[in-house]
Image (cartoon, rainbow, N blue to C red; front, side, top):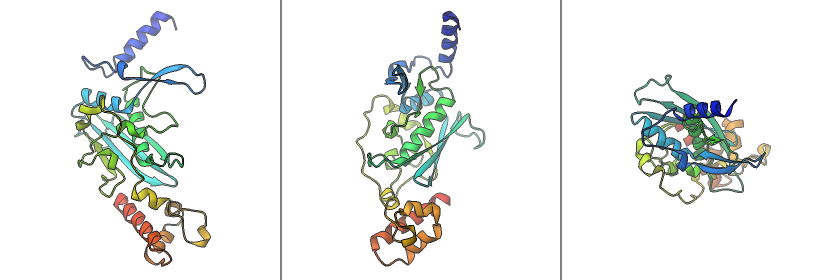
Length: 251
C-alpha cells in the first residue's frame, strides 16, 4: 500500500467513533513489542471506557463473570443504548485469567473483567488506530479499571467481596469523570473467596488439590467438606463460602 493510501486509510480508521473535541492519542501509553522490540502505542482500558461514554452516554457495558478451574471467565457485551435487548449488542468478548502466585494482590476476577471489557471495546472500534487497545497482554492490567462504579453502586475494587455485584454487572458513566486523571488504586489484599479457593483440600484422594479445584472436579465433595468435614473448622468455613458464592452466581 502506498504511503498516501495508507495515510488515508488510517484517517478513516481514526474517524470511527469520533467525538468532537476528544483525541485519545495523548492518553495512549508506549510499550515494547515482546517479539520485535518495536515501540508501539496502546490505549488503556479506562480510556476506552471513557471514550465509549463520551460517544454513547446512554450506552451500556454489561459484564458477567463465572468461576472455572484455576481461573475466572468474564464476558463483556457493548450496547449503544441501555434499553437494547440482551441479544442486540454491538460487540462481545470473553477472557479468562487465573491466579498469579508471584502477584497475590492481583484479582483474577477483576483482571478477567478488564480484559473482556477492553477487547469488546476494541472490537467495537474504540482504539483500532493504535498498536493495541484493550487487554491483549499476558501481564496483569486489572488496576486499569479500579475506579469503575457498578450498577448497584459497588466500586470495581470490591468485585470479589461479600457485597459483590451479581453475575451480570453494568459499568456506569459515573466512572468517566475520573477515568483519565485518577491514579491507579493501591494493590488490594487477597479476598476471602480467593483465600477459600486456594485452601488445600483435606480429602485424601484429592491430595495436592485446592478447594477451587474441587469445585470444578467434584462438586459433591466440596459440599461434603462444607457440611460434614470435622477436621478443621477453617477448611469447612472456606468450603461453605465457595458453595454459597457458587449458588449465588448461578441463581
